[in-house]
Length: 510
Image (spheres, rainbow, N blue to C red):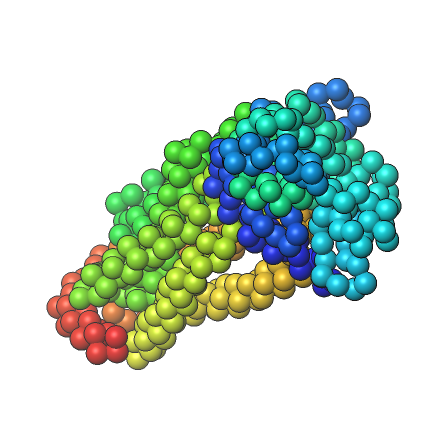
């Protein structure tokens, strides 16, 4: 990575929290935002988004960056001393450039430190004008990068930028920076807004594919819901507590996908992303993720199939669930609420750590509990339930392996694309986790689908040759319920003993 790339990356990391904090969807709001010193310039990040080229087939499908009510304020001392500033121009410049053209901004003299503003040495070498941003024409379009000048006049405290709309004729990741090369303008602040629009709406290019993705996910959850609820209503009298939990996860998943879709539709149509609405959506998502993980943990412990309750572990499971919900909620709020720029702030990197730690702890607990449940079923020779749990453990192992592999790919993807030049495929990073969660939920629904034998199957103990007989009665679904019920009555007395022993052993292991 060359020195300019490092310089721009430092600019992004330094200034992106400023842009995100005041952003409201694709309408970037600036309210007395201060400039920051970077190299030999003072900078303010105006935004960073993927924009598609204007579609000339329709006058409505235009893409642009629009400047509205942009006002720059300087200190009174600087304004009063304006007549004595012989070498100060009071110039502020707005620079719009595509990520691929970042090397066309700034330069270095004699292999020295890279500078954004033209220096005396660079003026001799490059022919640039001292006190202005050094800009070279793009290889594909001599009019890019775009530089717009704003000049303070006399001893005025502020100056306004004229209304300006810059059309986007090439698809790319565009960055906007406001730059002041005059050292006397180090206390410069700015107010106003810029509007970024794609041909199909205000959604940033990286987020636009997610709107269609959530349509497909909503349909997928809807189909799963119809299949599940059909069985759920059909065998209502035989439903287990575990199946009630699965129903809740399906309903939350469907609700979340629909909410995300309408949130993006509103975002795209109006250019406004209300904080309350987005917070509500991410809260539903955090609840769904928390309940899903607790469901997997409870199934691994044998809840609803091997044991009727979690016993003494209920409080520990609930405490973990509350902790995970808070960590997930905080991370999602930081990532989504008010966010528009295609570059993440440093706060998100910090908040990922507790979420990742809790996920790792959950995985360890899940596999420990699952191993113990398999041992119990094998010792009791419960062939039917053992087969189901083996299939579940295999699916869970595949899910964990896929998650670890995808995390590695995500780290590689972001490390090799610091300026988000592959923004058009970045939506897949987010979509993968929703697809993986849905696939695992489908496996759970298949393994523990409602049936007329659910109640008889739940806590009955299979011993020796009786195991095959019960398995036959469960799969044939004939009128042999009385025999199974009698068998269950005979074993009810032993179930409580098994559960008590299980809880004591689990507490010791924990």
